[in-house]
Image (cartoon, rainbow, N blue to C red; front, side, top):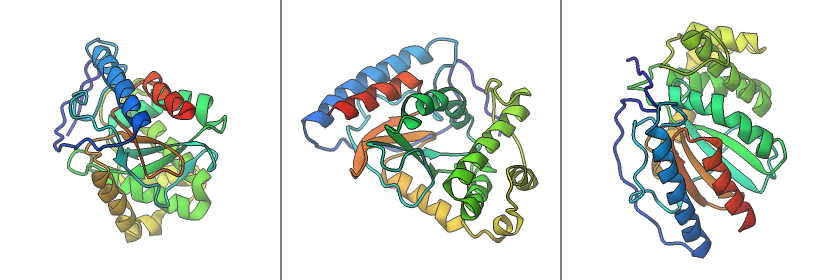
Length: 263
C-alpha cells in the first residue's frame, strides 16, 4: 500500500480512545501547555509545507488528548546519557514515512539541543503497523539482532541506516524529502546491517526477536499509543508522562521538555 504525504496529511486508519487521568497540579499545567501545542500543530498542518503530521492524517483532538499516560522503558535501546533527567519514549514503525519524517526533521534538533547535552535520553520502542507497513516487523527484529551483537550504539547506527536507505529509495538522497512509504526486502535489511558491520542473517531468519517486538506493541497499546510515531515525555524515574502523537516539529517537544525540566 503506497501512502502519499500531502500537506502533512496521510490517509491511514487509526482507532481507539484514551481517558484522561487525574494527576497533580504540574501535570494539569502541562496539559494546558499541550493543548497550545496541539492547536499550533493543527495550524501547521493546515498549510502546505508538510512540517508535521500523524500517521492517522489527523491532529489528535484536544478534547481527547490525555494529560498523562503510563509507559515503561523496558530493556530497549537508549540514545544519550542514561542518567539524563528527562526521558522520551518513542513508539515507532521503521517503515512508517512519518516516523522517518521525525527522524529527518525533528530528531537532529532534539539530539543537538537536549540529547547530546545530557538533558534528555531517547528510548526507541517498536510499534510495527504490519497491515500498513509489511516490512516494519522484520526491520524491528533486524535492529534487535544488531543490538544483541553491538549494544545500543550499534542499534542506533543501524536505526539511522534503515531510515537513510529508505530516504534514498524515496527521494534519491539520504537527506531528501519524505514523500511516501519506501518498499524494501529482508535481503535489503541484511545488506544494510552488513554495511554497518553486523551479520544478522541467521538471527533475522530465526525470528528470535519476534516476541520482543510484540511486547513493545503491547506496551504501546497499554500506554494509549495507537499510531506512529507516538511519544511519551517524562521525568526520568517516573512511570507516567505526557503523550505526543505525531511527527511534530522540534518546538512541540521543546515546550514540554522545558516545562518538565523546570517543574
